[in-house]
Image (cartoon, rainbow, N blue to C red):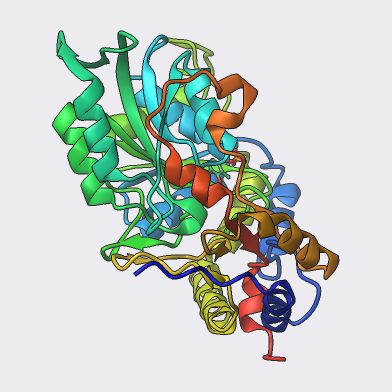
Length: 394
Ligand SMILES: *Cc1c(COP(=O)(O)O)cnc(C)c1O
């Protein structure tokens, strides 16, 4: 039976979100209240301010320990980490790389930096991430194996890799995607920029592919001001990641030799110092954000015309950004709802404009993107700072 979807009640939605937020709230404010001051001061006092220093190593060890990956390589930002992941996956100029259209622009830009072309995949509503079953069917349609490479027979370009993204912290169905990648012999990379603290079937995100990229931008769950990291369990990949991100310098006490075109992508020690202080509090941030998500779920349950987004059944999500999803039929209420929330000083925003609508990616090949279109027309992110999860109830 098809029921007419109830009309969105904008005043009720605004009141429910205001009650949880407990007052004016940013979308995501950084939490700086621990050892950041002490560790950064130590960098300044000792003059270890740049890309070599004890905090870089310590930050990498903390990341590896927390995520359970064997290696972590810190970079200047998440986009740089993703770029290197693609290089390490063997993406070459002229390749196509499968990425979701529903993502932050960095995912697509990293493909472009390799001289490759994005090929956009659709997402599923249960995870907001790539739909493995439909991607598999799409690849069955278009892929031809030529000289050991999966080639898009419609464009004659080899498919160099598949990059999934854990949208707003919610893990995609990694087993299903990894199986699809294996079936077509495609290297698999995770854009885990939003999912630090999120687990898939009990294991941290970032283990399923060749490598994964993290981001520590100012609005992420852990911030270093700006920063990123590459996670991998493969020793050779880790070694090459470190080499490529440090200008491909051949280690030597005083000689400057470089054996290929590298990148100046190493994270400075000051930023890593901040990251160490933040990592000490990550587990608490995750708990606070999960508590906040629980309160939103409760408050929004009674609001006609929308629902809060709940983690997929196989996942324990960091709920980086909380999501309210309007019911189908309420697309025309998205702008008025965003206006009402922002007027009430509850900083909220729509999903990113899907990549295939951006001028530089409009001509890229893609599969049917109906779910991406529908979600982009119905999704908003609402205030999600960890502190809101520990604020006393109004
Ligand atoms: C934040 C983010 C990145 C990386 O961003 P940087 O600002 O370069 O650290 C990449 N992909 C997604 C999906 C992101 O949200």
